[in-house]
Amino acid sequence: MPVRLHDGRLLAIECKISNGPKNSWKRLNREVGGKAERWRGHFGGQVVTAAVLAGMYDLSCLLAAQADGVHVSGSMTSSR
Image (cartoon, rainbow, N blue to C red; front, side):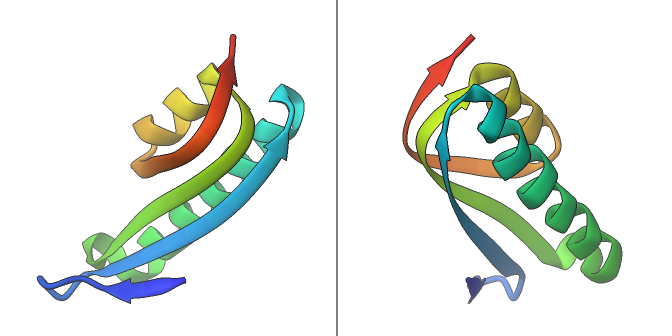
């Protein structure tokens, strides 16, 4: 869902649900991370990517997404 921020940038929000650690990599890092990379390539610094998550996510996937510039929020359980 796209949202225009007060400073003019675009906030691209992805909503994802994962039922386990293996599924979390696909949902967060491949799907959201892949789109974020394409959006940054097209819009540059004018886009901010966020993921609203529910379910179980591997902690390393959450950390990797944040390191890639994806803002992460939601109701989730993390596993190591």
